[in-house]
Image (tube, rainbow, N blue to C red; front, side):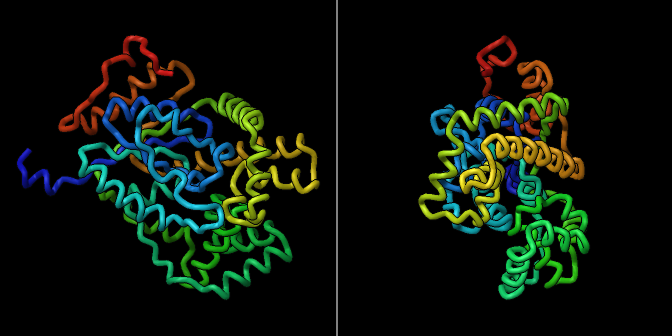
Length: 335
């Protein structure tokens, strides 16, 4: 490839998506090692410091020397939007590429990942603080369901994608319509969906029954790891129960137990149910995305890795070094 062609070539971007608990973290480490990649978290909750167990955040000692970005970058009280994520990713992708590494987004927050992969720009018309405050007062008075119903009346597609407890994003979707006369769904539909990157997106899926079993096991593991104490610690340090970050899975379900409104068993069952529903919404979002090559991770870990490496090689290997020592193929660690 000539120097001129290299300068004109799009930066490469590898993306791994899939529903919660499908196994993205484990596979991502092996992929990153094999392709000299740095991982960018594509999870909207892992940006928050102190929210580790409920977000299934990979621990520093578990990262096997692979750089991980956009983890622990703001406090739970701080606002962090899809626009913030998009801007940070653009900078990171350019920097990682400049250093000769492969940028690798791993996560399950569909809008966040898609906005970067296709360079979305939203004609949001700015902001209207008074309108936002009005909607928040409405939610406080009539409840999250009533606010969500308002969104469903004007934008049923976005209502299906947003959980009613995600009040900040529900209010933002209402605000966008209020300011522009266009729904968030219409804006997403109107995107050209052409990528500024040479893109390779791999999606992980599995049998729904098995996925739900994994979700239940993950919730139980979170409880054993100290999820209740983590949520209590956040409240004790002054994080409001109504903070946007505290509306995330694993937090909004435990708070009522800590406030004496339900039993722990009831809170855990609610968390498992909400997580299963979230996984369904994730899959629904991903089904509307393009350019995804899907891998069924129901069975053999090593075979899944071989298939993923073949997909990446088909996209990138013409000028990207594959650094694996072949341990994936001969029964190496792959844990």
